[in-house]
Amino acid sequence: MKIGIIGTGYIGLTEGLCFATLGQNVICYDIIKEKIEQLNKGIPTLYEENIEQMLKDNLAKKTISFTDDLKVVLSGSEIVFLCVNTPEDPKTGECDLSQILTSTESIAKMSEEIGNPFFILAIRSTVPVGTNKKVKEHMLKINPKLNYLQCSNPEFSRQGSAIYDFMHPDRIVVGVNDEKCKERMALTYKPLTDQNFQIFFTNIETAEMIKYASNTFLNIKIGFINEIADICEKTGANVEDIAKGMGMDKRISPMFLKPGPGIGGSCFPKDSIALAKMGNKLGLDLQIINSSVTSNIARKNSLAGRVINLSKDNNLEGKTVSLLGLTFKANTDDTRYSPALNLVEELAKKKVKVKAYDPHGIEKFKFMVDKSALDSIQFFENAYDAIKDTELLVIITEWDEFKKLDYKKIYDLIAQKTIVDFRNILDEKEIEKIGFKYYCIGKKI
Ligand code: UGA
Image 1 (tube, helix red, strand yellow):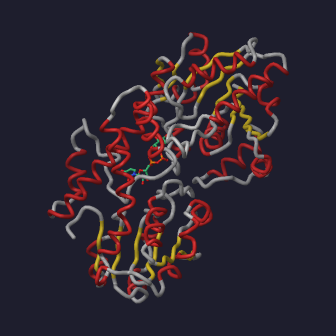
Image 2 (cartoon, helix red, strand yellow):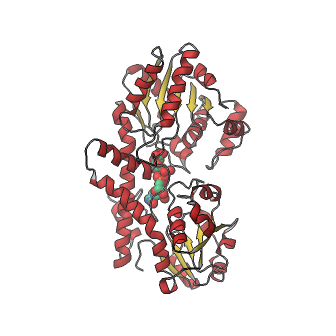
């Protein structure tokens, strides 16, 4: 099938490559010309395992191409996936639909210009319930002769494993209002349903809500285990065994029960806030959802205090700590809502300096961190340089390479011989054998 992708960000690019690899003919569009030029040269614009090879292979096979000309996409695509960003509106906390509205406006106008060929528009971006309806009204107002069908097709891919998640979906959710659209969407996903991956058809509003409900539910699940971890730190119960013991119950499942420094990324924090706001607008007081938002912010803001309380004399003023990890999780270069941002900004307020290293996140972190904190942080090209001459070491992202460092060598590089591991990635016994004081999440301090 001929597939058009609007918005070549995380989802647009990885899924365009996946569809191409599955044998579909894909054309990806983006308004950023430099991005298109870079991708046409075979250079990925984001970090994801195997992405470079996939891009090169599909460009060579001509199963994918990139353009900044919307006309090319609309004149040749049977299905157009809308994959633009729907970030948090910083003023209201609601979902900012400006990219959805401007891109669908362009689609409606361009379609008219080229004689209104038939296509299906699948909205893949995360949008609040009712958005598809609004988008349709908006597009038909601009171009009443628009010859298209629209459906909601939320994505469930995680950054860092977006390609794997797309190729091995737990479910493909499609919200449709008519049979023709349903048939076409079934055909688009046939390469996956032929491998027994399931497709779930429902109505449009329900599909929109499945996405918010899923992300917010997982946000609540992680927030819950983080609170259990806090109890463990005061009582001697072991949070990892608790997660294991709970997870054995099939109704609970062991997935997304890993405690950590708080939840980051461009999805869970903003989607939970947006869902809470949706409730507000409907006159509902959604207490569980609201507190999952506030408890996560509180957790991330508490990290600096936790580190200071674990230092000698509970005081790090004027001193330097080393920080391993800046991205919101491993295997991505994304630092949006990363707990490392809160940690560095709060430490800066308390006049604590930071030497930091991350294998892929430095540039994006510099862009995201509050400018007032930039003076107190230095970035390094490798972990050992970041650790040298610091008081203690903090690990905040679970990169594999941090597990493989030479901790005997690190012992001589840090003054207070203390490691704070917010991801529980190190072997407690091994680390303590070297002589470190080792603090991790959810074990007695
Ligand atoms: C999330 C969802 O997992 C995807 O299904 C969804 O498609 C995506 O949002 C989206 O809406 O586009 P993502 O934001 O990439 O994916 O990251 P996750 O792997 O879900 O992790 C989110 C945060 O929770 C990270 O900060 C991670 O470190 C944290 N986390 C996750 C934990 O602290 N513990 C866990 O057990 C799992």
